[in-house]
Image (cartoon, rainbow, N blue to C red):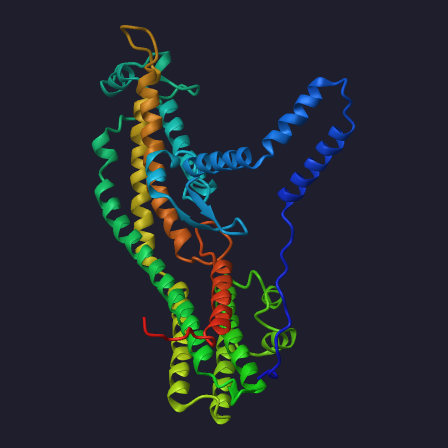
Length: 439
Protein backbone atom coordinates (compact mmCIF):
# COMPACT_ATOMS: atom_id res chain seq x y z
CA UNK A 1 0.00 0.00 0.00
CA UNK A 2 1.34 3.52 -0.69
CA UNK A 3 2.75 5.55 2.13
CA UNK A 4 0.37 7.57 4.31
CA UNK A 5 1.04 11.01 2.91
CA UNK A 6 -1.19 13.94 2.14
CA UNK A 7 -2.29 14.44 -1.42
CA UNK A 8 -1.01 17.75 -2.81
CA UNK A 9 -2.81 17.65 -6.17
CA UNK A 10 -5.24 20.42 -6.92
CA UNK A 11 -7.81 21.05 -9.59
CA UNK A 12 -7.23 24.06 -11.83
CA UNK A 13 -10.09 26.15 -13.17
CA UNK A 14 -9.26 27.65 -16.60
CA UNK A 15 -10.85 30.95 -17.66
CA UNK A 16 -13.91 30.91 -19.83
CA UNK A 17 -13.33 31.71 -23.49
CA UNK A 18 -16.58 33.66 -23.67
CA UNK A 19 -15.54 35.69 -20.65
CA UNK A 20 -12.21 36.58 -22.25
CA UNK A 21 -13.93 37.63 -25.49
CA UNK A 22 -16.47 39.71 -23.56
CA UNK A 23 -13.78 41.51 -21.56
CA UNK A 24 -11.73 42.22 -24.66
CA UNK A 25 -14.81 43.57 -26.43
CA UNK A 26 -15.53 45.91 -23.56
CA UNK A 27 -11.92 47.09 -23.49
CA UNK A 28 -12.02 47.77 -27.24
CA UNK A 29 -15.29 49.70 -26.87
CA UNK A 30 -13.82 51.69 -23.99
CA UNK A 31 -10.67 52.50 -25.96
CA UNK A 32 -12.76 53.59 -28.94
CA UNK A 33 -15.05 55.67 -26.77
CA UNK A 34 -12.03 57.35 -25.14
CA UNK A 35 -10.92 58.64 -28.51
CA UNK A 36 -14.37 60.01 -29.42
CA UNK A 37 -14.48 63.76 -29.81
CA UNK A 38 -17.52 65.93 -29.02
CA UNK A 39 -17.90 66.55 -32.75
CA UNK A 40 -19.24 63.00 -33.29
CA UNK A 41 -22.69 63.05 -31.69
CA UNK A 42 -23.63 59.56 -32.97
CA UNK A 43 -20.73 57.88 -31.14
CA UNK A 44 -21.41 60.01 -28.09
CA UNK A 45 -24.99 58.79 -28.04
CA UNK A 46 -23.72 55.20 -28.40
CA UNK A 47 -21.40 55.73 -25.46
CA UNK A 48 -24.21 57.11 -23.32
CA UNK A 49 -26.47 54.24 -24.33
CA UNK A 50 -23.78 51.73 -23.41
CA UNK A 51 -23.22 53.37 -20.02
CA UNK A 52 -26.96 53.42 -19.42
CA UNK A 53 -27.25 49.74 -20.29
CA UNK A 54 -24.41 48.89 -17.93
CA UNK A 55 -26.40 50.25 -15.02
CA UNK A 56 -27.55 47.58 -12.64
CA UNK A 57 -31.30 47.63 -13.26
CA UNK A 58 -31.04 47.48 -17.05
CA UNK A 59 -28.35 44.84 -16.96
CA UNK A 60 -30.30 42.66 -14.54
CA UNK A 61 -33.47 43.01 -16.60
CA UNK A 62 -31.66 42.01 -19.77
CA UNK A 63 -30.06 39.00 -18.09
CA UNK A 64 -33.39 37.97 -16.55
CA UNK A 65 -35.17 38.28 -19.90
CA UNK A 66 -32.44 36.25 -21.64
CA UNK A 67 -32.55 33.49 -19.03
CA UNK A 68 -36.34 33.33 -19.19
CA UNK A 69 -36.39 33.06 -22.99
CA UNK A 70 -33.61 30.50 -22.89
CA UNK A 71 -35.46 28.38 -20.32
CA UNK A 72 -38.58 28.35 -22.53
CA UNK A 73 -36.69 27.44 -25.70
CA UNK A 74 -33.94 25.14 -24.40
CA UNK A 75 -35.29 22.68 -21.83
CA UNK A 76 -31.99 20.80 -21.35
CA UNK A 77 -29.48 21.38 -18.57
CA UNK A 78 -25.94 20.33 -19.48
CA UNK A 79 -22.95 19.37 -17.36
CA UNK A 80 -20.01 21.69 -16.85
CA UNK A 81 -18.04 20.15 -19.70
CA UNK A 82 -21.13 20.43 -21.98
CA UNK A 83 -21.04 16.70 -22.77
CA UNK A 84 -23.87 15.19 -20.74
CA UNK A 85 -27.52 16.01 -20.24
CA UNK A 86 -28.17 16.41 -16.50
CA UNK A 87 -31.92 17.04 -16.59
CA UNK A 88 -34.71 18.42 -18.76
CA UNK A 89 -38.14 20.03 -18.44
CA UNK A 90 -40.72 17.42 -19.51
CA UNK A 91 -43.53 19.92 -20.14
CA UNK A 92 -41.48 21.93 -22.65
CA UNK A 93 -40.19 18.79 -24.36
CA UNK A 94 -43.72 17.39 -24.69
CA UNK A 95 -45.05 20.69 -26.06
CA UNK A 96 -42.65 21.89 -28.76
CA UNK A 97 -38.95 21.37 -27.91
CA UNK A 98 -38.99 17.82 -29.27
CA UNK A 99 -39.01 19.31 -32.78
CA UNK A 100 -35.61 21.03 -32.60
CA UNK A 101 -33.90 19.58 -29.51
CA UNK A 102 -32.48 16.54 -31.28
CA UNK A 103 -28.90 16.38 -30.06
CA UNK A 104 -28.54 13.45 -27.69
CA UNK A 105 -31.60 11.60 -29.03
CA UNK A 106 -32.04 8.54 -31.23
CA UNK A 107 -32.30 10.78 -34.31
CA UNK A 108 -28.68 10.59 -35.40
CA UNK A 109 -26.65 9.68 -38.47
CA UNK A 110 -27.18 5.92 -38.16
CA UNK A 111 -30.95 6.23 -37.83
CA UNK A 112 -31.19 8.71 -40.70
CA UNK A 113 -29.00 6.44 -42.85
CA UNK A 114 -31.33 3.49 -42.29
CA UNK A 115 -34.34 5.63 -43.16
CA UNK A 116 -32.65 6.66 -46.41
CA UNK A 117 -32.20 3.00 -47.30
CA UNK A 118 -35.94 2.34 -46.99
CA UNK A 119 -36.79 5.49 -48.92
CA UNK A 120 -34.48 4.21 -51.66
CA UNK A 121 -36.46 0.97 -51.71
CA UNK A 122 -39.63 3.01 -52.10
CA UNK A 123 -38.17 4.93 -55.04
CA UNK A 124 -36.87 1.82 -56.82
CA UNK A 125 -40.14 -0.03 -56.40
CA UNK A 126 -42.15 2.97 -57.56
CA UNK A 127 -40.01 3.43 -60.69
CA UNK A 128 -40.26 -0.24 -61.63
CA UNK A 129 -44.01 -0.45 -61.02
CA UNK A 130 -46.48 -0.08 -63.91
CA UNK A 131 -49.87 1.55 -63.79
CA UNK A 132 -53.03 -0.43 -63.03
CA UNK A 133 -53.96 -0.56 -66.72
CA UNK A 134 -50.63 -2.07 -67.71
CA UNK A 135 -50.87 -4.54 -64.84
CA UNK A 136 -54.30 -5.75 -65.98
CA UNK A 137 -53.16 -6.00 -69.60
CA UNK A 138 -50.14 -8.06 -68.52
CA UNK A 139 -52.25 -10.38 -66.40
CA UNK A 140 -54.85 -10.89 -69.18
CA UNK A 141 -52.19 -11.72 -71.77
CA UNK A 142 -52.79 -8.62 -73.89
CA UNK A 143 -49.77 -7.27 -75.72
CA UNK A 144 -48.12 -4.48 -73.69
CA UNK A 145 -47.70 -1.06 -75.25
CA UNK A 146 -44.51 1.00 -75.07
CA UNK A 147 -45.45 2.61 -71.75
CA UNK A 148 -45.63 -0.77 -70.02
CA UNK A 149 -42.15 -2.08 -70.83
CA UNK A 150 -38.70 -1.02 -69.76
CA UNK A 151 -35.71 -0.12 -71.92
CA UNK A 152 -34.95 -3.79 -72.51
CA UNK A 153 -38.41 -4.50 -73.92
CA UNK A 154 -39.47 -6.75 -71.05
CA UNK A 155 -42.44 -6.16 -68.71
CA UNK A 156 -41.55 -4.14 -65.61
CA UNK A 157 -44.83 -4.40 -63.74
CA UNK A 158 -44.64 -5.01 -59.97
CA UNK A 159 -47.72 -6.00 -58.01
CA UNK A 160 -49.44 -3.53 -55.72
CA UNK A 161 -48.70 -4.21 -52.03
CA UNK A 162 -51.65 -3.11 -49.92
CA UNK A 163 -51.50 -1.75 -46.39
CA UNK A 164 -52.72 -4.98 -44.75
CA UNK A 165 -49.75 -6.84 -46.22
CA UNK A 166 -47.39 -4.11 -45.04
CA UNK A 167 -48.72 -4.31 -41.49
CA UNK A 168 -48.61 -8.12 -41.19
CA UNK A 169 -45.61 -7.98 -38.80
CA UNK A 170 -46.56 -4.72 -37.11
CA UNK A 171 -48.19 -6.26 -34.02
CA UNK A 172 -45.43 -8.83 -33.54
CA UNK A 173 -42.70 -6.20 -33.93
CA UNK A 174 -44.41 -3.84 -31.48
CA UNK A 175 -44.83 -6.63 -28.92
CA UNK A 176 -41.19 -7.76 -29.11
CA UNK A 177 -39.92 -4.18 -29.06
CA UNK A 178 -41.96 -3.38 -25.95
CA UNK A 179 -40.29 -6.22 -24.03
CA UNK A 180 -36.90 -5.34 -25.53
CA UNK A 181 -37.05 -1.67 -24.53
CA UNK A 182 -38.42 -2.55 -21.08
CA UNK A 183 -35.45 -4.85 -20.39
CA UNK A 184 -33.02 -2.20 -21.64
CA UNK A 185 -34.46 0.53 -19.41
CA UNK A 186 -34.55 -1.81 -16.40
CA UNK A 187 -30.87 -2.69 -16.81
CA UNK A 188 -30.01 1.00 -17.21
CA UNK A 189 -31.86 1.81 -13.99
CA UNK A 190 -30.09 -1.02 -12.14
CA UNK A 191 -26.74 0.50 -13.14
CA UNK A 192 -27.92 3.87 -11.85
CA UNK A 193 -28.92 2.29 -8.53
CA UNK A 194 -25.44 0.77 -8.22
CA UNK A 195 -23.88 4.21 -8.76
CA UNK A 196 -26.22 5.63 -6.12
CA UNK A 197 -25.12 2.89 -3.72
CA UNK A 198 -21.44 3.73 -4.30
CA UNK A 199 -21.97 7.48 -3.85
CA UNK A 200 -24.18 6.95 -0.79
CA UNK A 201 -21.66 4.56 0.77
CA UNK A 202 -18.87 7.09 0.25
CA UNK A 203 -20.92 9.84 1.89
CA UNK A 204 -21.88 7.59 4.81
CA UNK A 205 -18.26 6.60 5.30
CA UNK A 206 -17.25 10.27 5.27
CA UNK A 207 -19.84 11.04 7.93
CA UNK A 208 -18.69 8.20 10.20
CA UNK A 209 -15.03 9.00 9.67
CA UNK A 210 -15.59 12.68 10.46
CA UNK A 211 -17.43 11.93 13.71
CA UNK A 212 -15.81 8.71 15.03
CA UNK A 213 -12.12 9.02 14.15
CA UNK A 214 -10.10 9.94 17.24
CA UNK A 215 -7.99 12.69 15.70
CA UNK A 216 -7.05 14.28 19.04
CA UNK A 217 -6.68 13.14 22.63
CA UNK A 218 -7.01 15.64 25.47
CA UNK A 219 -6.55 18.51 23.04
CA UNK A 220 -3.40 17.02 21.46
CA UNK A 221 -3.80 16.36 17.71
CA UNK A 222 -3.07 12.91 16.37
CA UNK A 223 -1.42 13.48 12.96
CA UNK A 224 -1.42 9.81 12.02
CA UNK A 225 -5.17 9.52 12.60
CA UNK A 226 -5.80 12.63 10.49
CA UNK A 227 -3.69 11.26 7.63
CA UNK A 228 -5.44 7.87 7.79
CA UNK A 229 -8.85 9.53 7.67
CA UNK A 230 -7.97 11.81 4.74
CA UNK A 231 -6.41 8.99 2.71
CA UNK A 232 -9.34 6.69 3.49
CA UNK A 233 -11.87 9.15 2.10
CA UNK A 234 -9.65 9.99 -0.85
CA UNK A 235 -9.26 6.30 -1.73
CA UNK A 236 -13.04 5.84 -1.69
CA UNK A 237 -13.45 8.59 -4.29
CA UNK A 238 -10.45 7.29 -6.24
CA UNK A 239 -12.00 3.82 -6.41
CA UNK A 240 -15.21 5.38 -7.68
CA UNK A 241 -13.25 7.25 -10.37
CA UNK A 242 -11.51 4.02 -11.39
CA UNK A 243 -14.87 2.25 -11.70
CA UNK A 244 -16.12 4.95 -14.08
CA UNK A 245 -12.86 4.92 -15.99
CA UNK A 246 -12.91 1.14 -16.46
CA UNK A 247 -16.62 1.18 -17.39
CA UNK A 248 -15.93 3.77 -20.11
CA UNK A 249 -13.08 1.60 -21.49
CA UNK A 250 -10.32 3.78 -20.02
CA UNK A 251 -11.04 6.92 -22.04
CA UNK A 252 -9.61 9.26 -19.41
CA UNK A 253 -6.65 7.34 -18.04
CA UNK A 254 -4.69 7.72 -14.82
CA UNK A 255 -3.32 11.17 -15.64
CA UNK A 256 -6.77 12.77 -15.38
CA UNK A 257 -7.43 11.01 -12.08
CA UNK A 258 -4.09 12.28 -10.72
CA UNK A 259 -4.81 15.82 -11.93
CA UNK A 260 -8.18 15.72 -10.20
CA UNK A 261 -6.48 14.97 -6.90
CA UNK A 262 -7.94 11.52 -6.33
CA UNK A 263 -4.59 9.73 -6.61
CA UNK A 264 -0.93 10.70 -6.27
CA UNK A 265 1.62 9.99 -8.99
CA UNK A 266 3.16 7.20 -6.93
CA UNK A 267 -0.21 5.54 -6.35
CA UNK A 268 -1.11 5.80 -10.04
CA UNK A 269 2.19 4.16 -10.99
CA UNK A 270 1.53 1.30 -8.57
CA UNK A 271 -1.91 0.73 -10.09
CA UNK A 272 -0.59 0.87 -13.65
CA UNK A 273 2.12 -1.72 -12.98
CA UNK A 274 -0.15 -4.00 -10.94
CA UNK A 275 -1.21 -7.18 -12.72
CA UNK A 276 -4.83 -6.84 -11.74
CA UNK A 277 -7.77 -6.46 -14.13
CA UNK A 278 -9.97 -4.37 -11.81
CA UNK A 279 -7.84 -1.57 -10.40
CA UNK A 280 -10.65 -0.28 -8.20
CA UNK A 281 -10.60 -3.49 -6.12
CA UNK A 282 -6.98 -2.83 -5.22
CA UNK A 283 -7.89 0.65 -3.99
CA UNK A 284 -10.70 -0.78 -1.87
CA UNK A 285 -8.04 -3.12 -0.48
CA UNK A 286 -6.02 -0.07 0.51
CA UNK A 287 -9.11 1.26 2.34
CA UNK A 288 -9.36 -2.02 4.26
CA UNK A 289 -5.69 -1.80 5.20
CA UNK A 290 -6.17 1.76 6.48
CA UNK A 291 -9.09 0.67 8.65
CA UNK A 292 -6.98 -2.14 10.02
CA UNK A 293 -4.22 0.30 11.01
CA UNK A 294 -6.79 2.64 12.57
CA UNK A 295 -8.14 -0.22 14.66
CA UNK A 296 -4.66 -1.30 15.77
CA UNK A 297 -3.80 2.26 16.79
CA UNK A 298 -7.07 2.51 18.79
CA UNK A 299 -8.31 5.26 16.50
CA UNK A 300 -11.47 3.23 15.92
CA UNK A 301 -13.45 0.90 18.14
CA UNK A 302 -14.55 -2.57 17.06
CA UNK A 303 -18.10 -1.39 16.29
CA UNK A 304 -16.87 1.59 14.25
CA UNK A 305 -14.40 -0.57 12.34
CA UNK A 306 -17.12 -3.12 11.57
CA UNK A 307 -19.53 -0.44 10.26
CA UNK A 308 -16.94 1.18 8.01
CA UNK A 309 -15.67 -2.15 6.69
CA UNK A 310 -19.25 -3.15 5.84
CA UNK A 311 -19.67 0.07 3.86
CA UNK A 312 -16.50 -0.59 1.89
CA UNK A 313 -17.64 -4.13 1.12
CA UNK A 314 -21.02 -2.83 -0.09
CA UNK A 315 -19.34 -0.27 -2.35
CA UNK A 316 -17.10 -2.95 -3.82
CA UNK A 317 -20.10 -5.22 -4.43
CA UNK A 318 -22.03 -2.41 -6.16
CA UNK A 319 -18.99 -1.68 -8.34
CA UNK A 320 -18.77 -5.32 -9.38
CA UNK A 321 -22.50 -5.39 -10.15
CA UNK A 322 -22.05 -2.49 -12.59
CA UNK A 323 -19.67 -4.58 -14.68
CA UNK A 324 -22.00 -7.55 -14.43
CA UNK A 325 -24.83 -5.50 -15.94
CA UNK A 326 -22.76 -3.77 -18.61
CA UNK A 327 -20.67 -6.82 -19.49
CA UNK A 328 -23.54 -9.31 -19.77
CA UNK A 329 -25.63 -8.42 -22.79
CA UNK A 330 -29.15 -9.49 -23.65
CA UNK A 331 -28.96 -12.91 -25.40
CA UNK A 332 -28.02 -12.51 -29.05
CA UNK A 333 -30.77 -14.87 -30.22
CA UNK A 334 -33.45 -12.58 -28.79
CA UNK A 335 -31.79 -9.46 -30.18
CA UNK A 336 -31.51 -11.11 -33.59
CA UNK A 337 -35.21 -12.12 -33.65
CA UNK A 338 -36.33 -8.61 -32.67
CA UNK A 339 -34.09 -7.04 -35.32
CA UNK A 340 -35.25 -9.49 -38.01
CA UNK A 341 -38.96 -8.89 -37.33
CA UNK A 342 -38.48 -5.10 -37.33
CA UNK A 343 -36.48 -5.13 -40.58
CA UNK A 344 -39.00 -7.36 -42.38
CA UNK A 345 -41.85 -5.15 -41.20
CA UNK A 346 -40.09 -2.02 -42.47
CA UNK A 347 -39.36 -3.73 -45.78
CA UNK A 348 -43.05 -4.57 -46.30
CA UNK A 349 -44.07 -1.04 -45.36
CA UNK A 350 -41.51 0.28 -47.85
CA UNK A 351 -43.01 -1.93 -50.59
CA UNK A 352 -46.45 -0.60 -49.74
CA UNK A 353 -45.14 2.97 -49.85
CA UNK A 354 -43.47 2.24 -53.17
CA UNK A 355 -46.77 0.89 -54.52
CA UNK A 356 -48.60 4.06 -53.49
CA UNK A 357 -45.90 6.28 -54.99
CA UNK A 358 -45.77 4.16 -58.16
CA UNK A 359 -49.53 4.42 -58.67
CA UNK A 360 -49.43 8.15 -57.97
CA UNK A 361 -46.68 8.81 -60.51
CA UNK A 362 -48.88 7.78 -63.46
CA UNK A 363 -51.25 10.37 -64.83
CA UNK A 364 -54.85 10.37 -63.75
CA UNK A 365 -57.02 9.61 -66.84
CA UNK A 366 -59.54 12.24 -65.75
CA UNK A 367 -57.22 15.10 -64.75
CA UNK A 368 -54.02 14.16 -66.59
CA UNK A 369 -51.85 15.06 -63.60
CA UNK A 370 -49.71 13.35 -61.02
CA UNK A 371 -51.21 12.58 -57.63
CA UNK A 372 -49.02 14.69 -55.37
CA UNK A 373 -50.92 13.66 -52.25
CA UNK A 374 -50.26 9.97 -52.97
CA UNK A 375 -46.54 10.56 -53.48
CA UNK A 376 -46.26 12.50 -50.22
CA UNK A 377 -48.29 9.86 -48.37
CA UNK A 378 -46.06 7.03 -49.61
CA UNK A 379 -42.82 8.68 -48.54
CA UNK A 380 -44.25 10.02 -45.28
CA UNK A 381 -45.62 6.72 -44.01
CA UNK A 382 -42.31 4.98 -44.70
CA UNK A 383 -40.27 7.78 -43.08
CA UNK A 384 -42.33 7.86 -39.87
CA UNK A 385 -42.52 4.08 -39.56
CA UNK A 386 -38.75 3.69 -40.05
CA UNK A 387 -38.05 6.55 -37.63
CA UNK A 388 -40.09 4.92 -34.85
CA UNK A 389 -38.85 1.36 -35.28
CA UNK A 390 -35.22 2.31 -35.92
CA UNK A 391 -35.35 4.74 -32.99
CA UNK A 392 -36.50 2.02 -30.60
CA UNK A 393 -33.70 -0.26 -31.83
CA UNK A 394 -31.13 2.52 -31.44
CA UNK A 395 -32.40 3.13 -27.91
CA UNK A 396 -30.86 -0.17 -26.84
CA UNK A 397 -27.58 0.75 -28.52
CA UNK A 398 -27.41 3.99 -26.52
CA UNK A 399 -28.53 2.74 -23.11
CA UNK A 400 -26.96 -0.71 -22.82
CA UNK A 401 -23.58 0.90 -21.91
CA UNK A 402 -24.25 4.22 -20.14
CA UNK A 403 -20.63 5.31 -19.56
CA UNK A 404 -18.70 7.66 -21.84
CA UNK A 405 -18.79 11.17 -23.26
CA UNK A 406 -22.10 11.03 -25.14
CA UNK A 407 -25.01 13.25 -24.01
CA UNK A 408 -27.24 10.32 -22.99
CA UNK A 409 -24.58 8.73 -20.75
CA UNK A 410 -23.97 9.39 -17.06
CA UNK A 411 -22.20 12.60 -16.04
CA UNK A 412 -19.58 10.85 -13.92
CA UNK A 413 -17.40 13.96 -13.55
CA UNK A 414 -20.27 15.78 -11.88
CA UNK A 415 -20.86 12.82 -9.56
CA UNK A 416 -17.20 12.67 -8.52
CA UNK A 417 -17.00 16.42 -7.91
CA UNK A 418 -20.18 16.32 -5.82
CA UNK A 419 -18.93 13.36 -3.80
CA UNK A 420 -15.57 15.04 -3.18
CA UNK A 421 -17.25 18.27 -2.05
CA UNK A 422 -19.59 16.38 0.30
CA UNK A 423 -16.69 14.46 1.82
CA UNK A 424 -14.65 17.60 2.51
CA UNK A 425 -17.66 19.45 3.92
CA UNK A 426 -18.51 16.63 6.31
CA UNK A 427 -14.94 16.41 7.61
CA UNK A 428 -14.64 20.16 8.12
CA UNK A 429 -18.01 20.79 9.76
CA UNK A 430 -19.03 17.65 11.67
CA UNK A 431 -16.19 17.96 14.17
CA UNK A 432 -17.70 21.30 15.24
CA UNK A 433 -21.17 20.32 16.45
CA UNK A 434 -23.74 22.91 17.40
CA UNK A 435 -24.19 23.61 21.12
CA UNK A 436 -27.22 21.69 22.32
CA UNK A 437 -29.36 24.04 24.37
CA UNK A 438 -32.87 23.74 25.69
CA UNK A 439 -35.19 25.77 23.42
